[in-house]
Image 1 (cartoon, chains in turn brown, red):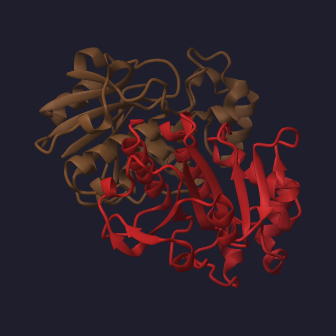
Image 2 (cartoon, chains in turn red, yellow):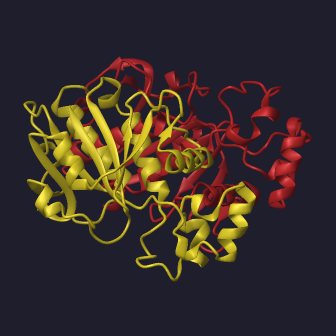
Length: 222
Length: 222
Protein backbone atom coordinates (compact mmCIF):
# COMPACT_ATOMS: atom_id res chain seq x y z
CA UNK A 1 0.00 0.00 0.00
CA UNK A 2 1.15 3.53 -0.82
CA UNK A 3 -0.05 6.26 1.55
CA UNK A 4 0.14 9.62 -0.21
CA UNK A 5 -0.09 12.69 1.98
CA UNK A 6 -0.45 16.17 0.53
CA UNK A 7 0.99 18.17 3.42
CA UNK A 8 0.53 21.79 4.48
CA UNK A 9 -1.93 22.20 1.61
CA UNK A 10 -3.10 25.75 1.13
CA UNK A 11 -6.77 24.86 1.43
CA UNK A 12 -8.74 26.74 4.10
CA UNK A 13 -11.84 28.81 4.75
CA UNK A 14 -11.65 32.61 4.46
CA UNK A 15 -10.01 33.77 7.73
CA UNK A 16 -12.14 36.02 9.96
CA UNK A 17 -9.55 38.82 9.76
CA UNK A 18 -10.38 39.52 6.09
CA UNK A 19 -14.08 38.53 6.19
CA UNK A 20 -15.29 42.12 6.09
CA UNK A 21 -13.34 43.06 2.94
CA UNK A 22 -15.73 44.19 0.23
CA UNK A 23 -14.56 41.61 -2.36
CA UNK A 24 -15.19 38.79 0.12
CA UNK A 25 -18.57 40.15 1.19
CA UNK A 26 -19.65 40.51 -2.45
CA UNK A 27 -18.61 36.94 -3.36
CA UNK A 28 -20.19 35.51 -0.20
CA UNK A 29 -23.50 37.21 -0.96
CA UNK A 30 -23.36 35.87 -4.53
CA UNK A 31 -22.86 32.30 -3.25
CA UNK A 32 -25.39 32.63 -0.42
CA UNK A 33 -22.71 31.86 2.21
CA UNK A 34 -21.20 33.64 5.17
CA UNK A 35 -17.80 35.16 4.27
CA UNK A 36 -15.93 32.71 6.53
CA UNK A 37 -17.68 29.76 4.86
CA UNK A 38 -15.99 30.45 1.51
CA UNK A 39 -12.85 28.55 0.48
CA UNK A 40 -9.93 30.99 0.30
CA UNK A 41 -8.90 31.42 -3.34
CA UNK A 42 -6.00 33.67 -4.30
CA UNK A 43 -7.28 33.93 -7.86
CA UNK A 44 -10.52 35.55 -6.64
CA UNK A 45 -9.66 37.00 -3.24
CA UNK A 46 -6.29 38.52 -4.05
CA UNK A 47 -7.23 42.14 -3.25
CA UNK A 48 -8.57 41.04 0.15
CA UNK A 49 -5.56 38.88 1.03
CA UNK A 50 -2.90 41.57 1.23
CA UNK A 51 -3.05 41.89 5.02
CA UNK A 52 -2.94 38.13 5.61
CA UNK A 53 0.34 36.62 6.92
CA UNK A 54 2.04 34.49 4.22
CA UNK A 55 -0.51 35.77 1.70
CA UNK A 56 1.81 34.94 -1.21
CA UNK A 57 1.33 31.18 -0.69
CA UNK A 58 -2.23 30.93 0.70
CA UNK A 59 -5.55 30.24 -1.03
CA UNK A 60 -4.56 27.51 -3.53
CA UNK A 61 -7.43 24.98 -3.54
CA UNK A 62 -6.55 24.22 -7.19
CA UNK A 63 -3.40 22.36 -6.01
CA UNK A 64 -5.38 19.91 -3.86
CA UNK A 65 -7.98 19.59 -6.65
CA UNK A 66 -5.48 18.66 -9.41
CA UNK A 67 -3.37 16.48 -7.11
CA UNK A 68 -6.41 14.54 -5.87
CA UNK A 69 -7.65 13.95 -9.43
CA UNK A 70 -4.22 12.60 -10.44
CA UNK A 71 -4.19 10.35 -7.38
CA UNK A 72 -7.76 9.03 -7.59
CA UNK A 73 -7.55 8.43 -11.37
CA UNK A 74 -4.24 6.54 -11.05
CA UNK A 75 -3.84 2.84 -11.84
CA UNK A 76 -2.42 2.44 -8.30
CA UNK A 77 -5.76 3.63 -6.91
CA UNK A 78 -7.81 1.60 -9.40
CA UNK A 79 -6.12 -1.61 -8.18
CA UNK A 80 -6.69 -0.61 -4.53
CA UNK A 81 -3.02 0.08 -3.68
CA UNK A 82 -3.42 3.75 -2.72
CA UNK A 83 -4.68 5.82 0.21
CA UNK A 84 -4.74 9.62 -0.11
CA UNK A 85 -4.88 12.28 2.60
CA UNK A 86 -4.88 16.06 2.35
CA UNK A 87 -3.33 17.74 5.36
CA UNK A 88 -3.98 21.50 5.41
CA UNK A 89 -2.47 24.68 6.84
CA UNK A 90 -4.57 24.68 10.00
CA UNK A 91 -3.99 21.00 10.79
CA UNK A 92 -7.16 19.69 9.30
CA UNK A 93 -6.85 16.35 7.49
CA UNK A 94 -9.14 15.25 4.67
CA UNK A 95 -9.40 11.49 4.49
CA UNK A 96 -10.38 10.49 0.95
CA UNK A 97 -12.21 7.24 0.22
CA UNK A 98 -10.48 5.54 -2.74
CA UNK A 99 -13.84 5.19 -4.52
CA UNK A 100 -14.46 8.94 -4.49
CA UNK A 101 -15.38 10.36 -7.88
CA UNK A 102 -14.20 13.90 -7.43
CA UNK A 103 -15.82 16.66 -9.54
CA UNK A 104 -13.57 17.69 -12.42
CA UNK A 105 -15.11 21.16 -12.74
CA UNK A 106 -13.42 23.46 -10.24
CA UNK A 107 -16.69 25.16 -9.26
CA UNK A 108 -18.17 21.86 -8.12
CA UNK A 109 -15.02 20.89 -6.24
CA UNK A 110 -15.18 24.24 -4.45
CA UNK A 111 -18.81 23.64 -3.46
CA UNK A 112 -17.82 20.24 -2.08
CA UNK A 113 -14.96 21.73 -0.05
CA UNK A 114 -17.25 24.44 1.35
CA UNK A 115 -19.64 21.74 2.51
CA UNK A 116 -16.81 19.58 3.91
CA UNK A 117 -15.31 22.41 5.98
CA UNK A 118 -18.79 23.26 7.28
CA UNK A 119 -20.06 19.79 8.13
CA UNK A 120 -16.95 17.61 8.41
CA UNK A 121 -18.28 14.93 6.06
CA UNK A 122 -19.53 14.76 2.45
CA UNK A 123 -21.79 13.43 1.11
CA UNK A 124 -23.76 13.61 4.41
CA UNK A 125 -25.06 10.04 4.21
CA UNK A 126 -22.29 7.55 3.47
CA UNK A 127 -19.43 10.09 3.46
CA UNK A 128 -16.49 9.70 1.06
CA UNK A 129 -14.57 12.68 2.41
CA UNK A 130 -14.01 13.18 6.15
CA UNK A 131 -12.43 16.19 7.83
CA UNK A 132 -10.48 15.63 11.05
CA UNK A 133 -8.40 17.91 13.31
CA UNK A 134 -4.92 16.39 13.19
CA UNK A 135 -1.30 17.39 12.67
CA UNK A 136 0.85 15.87 9.93
CA UNK A 137 2.84 14.09 12.62
CA UNK A 138 -0.29 12.57 14.19
CA UNK A 139 -1.54 11.46 10.77
CA UNK A 140 1.73 9.73 9.88
CA UNK A 141 1.87 8.04 13.30
CA UNK A 142 -1.64 6.76 12.74
CA UNK A 143 -0.76 5.41 9.27
CA UNK A 144 2.24 3.68 10.89
CA UNK A 145 4.16 3.08 7.66
CA UNK A 146 7.39 1.08 7.37
CA UNK A 147 9.08 4.06 5.76
CA UNK A 148 8.31 7.77 5.27
CA UNK A 149 9.69 9.69 2.30
CA UNK A 150 9.16 13.44 1.96
CA UNK A 151 9.58 15.04 -1.45
CA UNK A 152 11.47 18.31 -1.03
CA UNK A 153 13.66 20.54 -3.20
CA UNK A 154 16.37 20.43 -0.53
CA UNK A 155 16.23 16.60 -0.39
CA UNK A 156 18.81 14.15 -1.68
CA UNK A 157 18.70 13.81 -5.48
CA UNK A 158 17.38 10.42 -6.58
CA UNK A 159 16.30 8.91 -9.86
CA UNK A 160 12.56 8.23 -10.03
CA UNK A 161 13.28 4.49 -10.41
CA UNK A 162 15.15 4.49 -7.08
CA UNK A 163 12.16 5.73 -5.07
CA UNK A 164 10.49 2.34 -4.45
CA UNK A 165 11.34 -1.32 -4.54
CA UNK A 166 9.02 -4.22 -5.28
CA UNK A 167 9.29 -5.09 -1.56
CA UNK A 168 7.72 -1.80 -0.39
CA UNK A 169 4.50 -2.85 1.24
CA UNK A 170 3.51 0.01 3.51
CA UNK A 171 5.21 3.24 2.50
CA UNK A 172 4.16 6.83 3.09
CA UNK A 173 5.13 9.66 0.73
CA UNK A 174 4.67 13.25 1.84
CA UNK A 175 4.32 15.91 -0.88
CA UNK A 176 3.89 19.63 -0.20
CA UNK A 177 0.42 20.91 -1.20
CA UNK A 178 1.66 24.47 -1.70
CA UNK A 179 3.32 26.45 -4.49
CA UNK A 180 6.00 28.50 -2.71
CA UNK A 181 8.37 28.09 0.18
CA UNK A 182 8.93 25.12 2.42
CA UNK A 183 6.84 22.80 4.59
CA UNK A 184 5.29 24.41 7.67
CA UNK A 185 5.16 21.01 9.42
CA UNK A 186 8.36 19.45 10.82
CA UNK A 187 9.01 17.02 7.93
CA UNK A 188 12.67 16.62 8.92
CA UNK A 189 11.48 14.91 12.09
CA UNK A 190 8.59 13.03 10.46
CA UNK A 191 10.32 11.63 7.37
CA UNK A 192 13.05 9.00 7.21
CA UNK A 193 14.45 10.64 4.10
CA UNK A 194 13.99 13.79 2.03
CA UNK A 195 14.15 13.22 -1.70
CA UNK A 196 14.43 15.59 -4.67
CA UNK A 197 13.72 14.30 -8.19
CA UNK A 198 14.83 17.24 -10.29
CA UNK A 199 17.10 20.30 -9.99
CA UNK A 200 14.19 22.72 -10.60
CA UNK A 201 11.03 23.17 -8.48
CA UNK A 202 8.13 20.96 -9.59
CA UNK A 203 4.42 21.52 -8.93
CA UNK A 204 2.58 19.33 -6.41
CA UNK A 205 0.24 17.65 -8.95
CA UNK A 206 3.29 16.87 -11.13
CA UNK A 207 5.19 15.30 -8.22
CA UNK A 208 2.06 13.31 -7.26
CA UNK A 209 1.87 11.88 -10.78
CA UNK A 210 5.58 10.96 -10.92
CA UNK A 211 5.58 9.33 -7.48
CA UNK A 212 2.53 7.27 -8.44
CA UNK A 213 4.12 6.35 -11.76
CA UNK A 214 7.23 5.14 -9.94
CA UNK A 215 5.16 3.10 -7.47
CA UNK A 216 3.08 1.54 -10.26
CA UNK A 217 6.22 0.55 -12.12
CA UNK A 218 7.94 -0.86 -9.03
CA UNK A 219 4.85 -2.93 -8.27
CA UNK A 220 4.27 -4.07 -11.86
CA UNK A 221 0.91 -2.30 -12.06
CA UNK A 222 1.80 -0.31 -15.18
CA UNK B 1 11.97 15.56 -28.91
CA UNK B 2 8.56 14.26 -27.83
CA UNK B 3 5.57 15.69 -29.69
CA UNK B 4 2.45 15.24 -27.59
CA UNK B 5 -0.87 15.67 -29.37
CA UNK B 6 -4.14 15.81 -27.46
CA UNK B 7 -6.46 14.69 -30.27
CA UNK B 8 -10.20 15.21 -30.84
CA UNK B 9 -10.26 17.30 -27.67
CA UNK B 10 -13.73 18.36 -26.62
CA UNK B 11 -12.88 22.04 -26.60
CA UNK B 12 -15.07 24.28 -28.78
CA UNK B 13 -17.20 27.41 -28.81
CA UNK B 14 -20.94 27.11 -28.09
CA UNK B 15 -22.49 25.87 -31.37
CA UNK B 16 -24.99 28.21 -33.07
CA UNK B 17 -27.74 25.56 -32.82
CA UNK B 18 -28.00 25.95 -29.03
CA UNK B 19 -27.02 29.64 -28.81
CA UNK B 20 -30.59 30.80 -28.15
CA UNK B 21 -31.15 28.47 -25.17
CA UNK B 22 -31.96 30.52 -22.07
CA UNK B 23 -29.10 29.08 -19.97
CA UNK B 24 -26.57 30.04 -22.66
CA UNK B 25 -28.07 33.51 -23.16
CA UNK B 26 -27.99 34.15 -19.41
CA UNK B 27 -24.33 33.07 -19.04
CA UNK B 28 -23.28 35.02 -22.15
CA UNK B 29 -24.89 38.20 -20.80
CA UNK B 30 -23.15 37.68 -17.47
CA UNK B 31 -19.76 37.38 -19.19
CA UNK B 32 -20.41 40.20 -21.67
CA UNK B 33 -19.96 37.85 -24.64
CA UNK B 34 -22.06 36.67 -27.57
CA UNK B 35 -23.46 33.18 -26.87
CA UNK B 36 -21.30 31.62 -29.61
CA UNK B 37 -18.18 33.22 -28.11
CA UNK B 38 -18.46 31.12 -24.93
CA UNK B 39 -16.45 27.91 -24.51
CA UNK B 40 -18.85 24.96 -24.39
CA UNK B 41 -18.86 23.51 -20.87
CA UNK B 42 -20.96 20.48 -19.99
CA UNK B 43 -20.79 21.33 -16.30
CA UNK B 44 -22.56 24.66 -16.92
CA UNK B 45 -24.39 24.19 -20.21
CA UNK B 46 -25.79 20.72 -19.64
CA UNK B 47 -29.49 21.69 -19.88
CA UNK B 48 -28.82 23.43 -23.21
CA UNK B 49 -26.77 20.58 -24.69
CA UNK B 50 -29.47 17.93 -24.90
CA UNK B 51 -30.22 18.53 -28.59
CA UNK B 52 -26.55 18.53 -29.59
CA UNK B 53 -25.21 15.46 -31.45
CA UNK B 54 -22.79 13.47 -29.21
CA UNK B 55 -23.75 15.72 -26.29
CA UNK B 56 -22.56 13.07 -23.80
CA UNK B 57 -18.90 13.68 -24.71
CA UNK B 58 -18.81 17.36 -25.69
CA UNK B 59 -17.93 20.45 -23.68
CA UNK B 60 -14.94 19.24 -21.64
CA UNK B 61 -12.41 22.12 -21.59
CA UNK B 62 -11.22 20.82 -18.20
CA UNK B 63 -9.53 17.88 -19.95
CA UNK B 64 -7.34 20.13 -22.11
CA UNK B 65 -6.70 22.38 -19.11
CA UNK B 66 -5.46 19.58 -16.79
CA UNK B 67 -3.56 17.80 -19.56
CA UNK B 68 -1.78 21.00 -20.64
CA UNK B 69 -0.76 21.81 -17.07
CA UNK B 70 0.69 18.32 -16.64
CA UNK B 71 2.57 18.68 -19.92
CA UNK B 72 3.90 22.23 -19.43
CA UNK B 73 4.93 21.57 -15.81
CA UNK B 74 6.78 18.36 -16.73
CA UNK B 75 10.55 17.92 -16.43
CA UNK B 76 10.53 16.95 -20.15
CA UNK B 77 9.18 20.40 -20.97
CA UNK B 78 11.48 22.16 -18.52
CA UNK B 79 14.52 20.69 -20.29
CA UNK B 80 13.11 21.66 -23.72
CA UNK B 81 12.32 18.11 -24.90
CA UNK B 82 8.56 18.55 -25.40
CA UNK B 83 6.17 20.11 -27.88
CA UNK B 84 2.42 20.08 -27.10
CA UNK B 85 -0.53 20.50 -29.45
CA UNK B 86 -4.26 20.42 -28.76
CA UNK B 87 -6.29 19.20 -31.72
CA UNK B 88 -10.03 19.81 -31.25
CA UNK B 89 -13.34 18.42 -32.45
CA UNK B 90 -13.73 20.88 -35.32
CA UNK B 91 -10.17 20.46 -36.59
CA UNK B 92 -8.68 23.45 -34.92
CA UNK B 93 -5.17 22.98 -33.57
CA UNK B 94 -3.74 24.95 -30.65
CA UNK B 95 0.03 25.25 -30.87
CA UNK B 96 1.43 25.81 -27.38
CA UNK B 97 4.73 27.57 -26.85
CA UNK B 98 6.79 25.54 -24.32
CA UNK B 99 7.36 28.69 -22.22
CA UNK B 100 3.60 29.24 -21.72
CA UNK B 101 2.62 29.75 -18.09
CA UNK B 102 -0.97 28.57 -18.26
CA UNK B 103 -3.46 29.89 -15.66
CA UNK B 104 -4.15 27.30 -12.96
CA UNK B 105 -7.55 28.73 -12.07
CA UNK B 106 -10.14 27.31 -14.47
CA UNK B 107 -11.94 30.65 -14.84
CA UNK B 108 -8.79 32.29 -16.18
CA UNK B 109 -8.05 29.40 -18.53
CA UNK B 110 -11.59 29.72 -19.88
CA UNK B 111 -11.12 33.44 -20.49
CA UNK B 112 -7.90 32.69 -22.37
CA UNK B 113 -9.62 30.06 -24.54
CA UNK B 114 -12.51 32.46 -25.33
CA UNK B 115 -9.95 35.00 -26.50
CA UNK B 116 -7.97 32.40 -28.47
CA UNK B 117 -11.01 31.11 -30.37
CA UNK B 118 -12.03 34.71 -31.14
CA UNK B 119 -8.70 36.12 -32.23
CA UNK B 120 -6.55 33.10 -33.14
CA UNK B 121 -3.61 34.17 -30.96
CA UNK B 122 -3.00 35.00 -27.29
CA UNK B 123 -1.55 37.10 -25.85
CA UNK B 124 -2.10 39.41 -28.86
CA UNK B 125 1.47 40.74 -28.96
CA UNK B 126 4.04 37.98 -28.83
CA UNK B 127 1.51 35.09 -28.83
CA UNK B 128 2.19 31.89 -26.87
CA UNK B 129 -0.93 30.09 -28.08
CA UNK B 130 -1.86 29.97 -31.76
CA UNK B 131 -5.05 28.56 -33.25
CA UNK B 132 -4.87 27.01 -36.73
CA UNK B 133 -7.39 25.16 -38.91
CA UNK B 134 -5.86 21.74 -39.39
CA UNK B 135 -6.80 18.06 -39.20
CA UNK B 136 -4.97 15.63 -36.93
CA UNK B 137 -3.51 14.00 -40.03
CA UNK B 138 -2.18 17.32 -41.38
CA UNK B 139 -0.69 18.16 -37.98
CA UNK B 140 1.15 14.85 -37.70
CA UNK B 141 2.42 15.14 -41.30
CA UNK B 142 3.76 18.59 -40.48
CA UNK B 143 5.50 17.32 -37.33
CA UNK B 144 7.03 14.54 -39.48
CA UNK B 145 8.02 12.28 -36.57
CA UNK B 146 10.04 9.08 -36.93
CA UNK B 147 7.28 7.15 -35.20
CA UNK B 148 3.65 7.80 -34.17
CA UNK B 149 2.10 6.04 -31.19
CA UNK B 150 -1.59 6.46 -30.34
CA UNK B 151 -2.77 5.63 -26.84
CA UNK B 152 -6.07 3.74 -27.09
CA UNK B 153 -8.03 1.31 -24.94
CA UNK B 154 -8.23 -1.07 -27.91
CA UNK B 155 -4.46 -0.88 -28.51
CA UNK B 156 -1.86 -3.54 -27.83
CA UNK B 157 -1.05 -3.86 -24.10
CA UNK B 158 2.43 -2.66 -23.26
CA UNK B 159 4.32 -1.93 -20.08
CA UNK B 160 5.02 1.77 -19.55
CA UNK B 161 8.78 1.08 -19.69
CA UNK B 162 8.38 -0.39 -23.20
CA UNK B 163 6.91 2.79 -24.68
CA UNK B 164 10.18 4.58 -25.49
CA UNK B 165 13.84 3.78 -25.93
CA UNK B 166 16.80 6.03 -25.27
CA UNK B 167 17.24 6.22 -29.07
CA UNK B 168 13.81 7.86 -29.65
CA UNK B 169 14.68 11.28 -31.00
CA UNK B 170 11.55 12.46 -32.78
CA UNK B 171 8.48 10.60 -31.61
CA UNK B 172 4.83 11.68 -31.65
CA UNK B 173 2.31 10.39 -29.11
CA UNK B 174 -1.41 10.92 -29.73
CA UNK B 175 -3.72 10.91 -26.68
CA UNK B 176 -7.49 11.36 -26.87
CA UNK B 177 -8.66 14.65 -25.34
CA UNK B 178 -12.12 13.31 -24.55
CA UNK B 179 -13.75 11.30 -21.77
CA UNK B 180 -16.02 8.84 -23.58
CA UNK B 181 -15.93 6.78 -26.77
CA UNK B 182 -13.26 6.56 -29.41
CA UNK B 183 -11.20 8.94 -31.54
CA UNK B 184 -13.16 10.82 -34.22
CA UNK B 185 -10.01 11.19 -36.33
CA UNK B 186 -8.63 8.21 -38.28
CA UNK B 187 -5.86 7.27 -35.79
CA UNK B 188 -5.56 3.77 -37.25
CA UNK B 189 -4.23 5.34 -40.44
CA UNK B 190 -2.20 8.05 -38.70
CA UNK B 191 -0.43 5.99 -36.03
CA UNK B 192 2.21 3.30 -36.50
CA UNK B 193 0.93 1.52 -33.42
CA UNK B 194 -1.95 1.68 -30.95
CA UNK B 195 -0.92 1.08 -27.35
CA UNK B 196 -2.93 0.43 -24.19
CA UNK B 197 -1.22 0.73 -20.78
CA UNK B 198 -3.90 -0.65 -18.50
CA UNK B 199 -6.97 -2.92 -18.68
CA UNK B 200 -9.30 -0.14 -17.48
CA UNK B 201 -9.99 3.23 -19.13
CA UNK B 202 -7.67 6.01 -17.95
CA UNK B 203 -8.32 9.77 -18.09
CA UNK B 204 -6.46 11.92 -20.60
CA UNK B 205 -4.49 13.97 -18.02
CA UNK B 206 -3.46 10.70 -16.34
CA UNK B 207 -2.22 9.20 -19.62
CA UNK B 208 -0.38 12.43 -20.43
CA UNK B 209 1.46 12.22 -17.09
CA UNK B 210 2.40 8.54 -17.51
CA UNK B 211 3.60 8.99 -21.11
CA UNK B 212 5.76 11.92 -20.03
CA UNK B 213 7.07 9.96 -17.06
CA UNK B 214 8.06 7.10 -19.38
CA UNK B 215 9.78 9.50 -21.79
CA UNK B 216 11.65 11.25 -18.99
CA UNK B 217 12.87 7.94 -17.62
CA UNK B 218 13.91 6.61 -21.04
CA UNK B 219 15.88 9.80 -21.67
CA UNK B 220 17.43 9.95 -18.19
CA UNK B 221 15.68 13.26 -17.40
CA UNK B 222 14.10 11.95 -14.18
